[in-house]
Length: 271
Image (cartoon, rainbow, N blue to C red):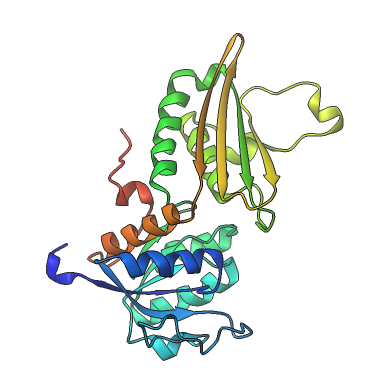
């Protein structure tokens, strides 16, 4: 991408939410992107509010009002809203950065289909550290995964709805793919009663904790008799996710179509 294509015009969804506020803050600091629009749901009390004293951009619920003001939409919302924005971006040839999680198979298929016509970066986690961790999980699983019991523990704030987190599921699928396991068959979600008596081989366990204002922590345990390896990522600020999304928006700006993830953005190619 050439310098003359900068800055990139972006719009964000959920401008009044945790992630939206963080994105607004990081966009303001960036020399490579500028804010073209900010969206909220139509019931929000923020509709009509000016983003800042330095900007005349008002928060709106109508994406058509800003369709000429941005090139890339950054969306951290919910599956239903993302599908609406996906249709808009397809019709108006806008690129998308999708950080929403909790999609069903049909919605994932729709995203894949739309990506044949527009460029999309879809990731459960835009943290650089988490995406480096995914590569570490691949390497660890290759070396000792078949001999180990594998558990994934994820911790998030009390208001997070989906569980396990999208990031935890991505970690589990990464390990399962590396070990040539069917993820749906090997994933175990929580345990109680008689299920705790015998642990089956070639399974991946998931545990979810919701408490306080924890931004996000993920630990993967590879446990063998006599030793274990624990790989952990802890996010202390949403700025890491916001900056990753901005990096993705810049990277995707010269891509006409295709579905990408952060491993592509960060050039973390598999062997």
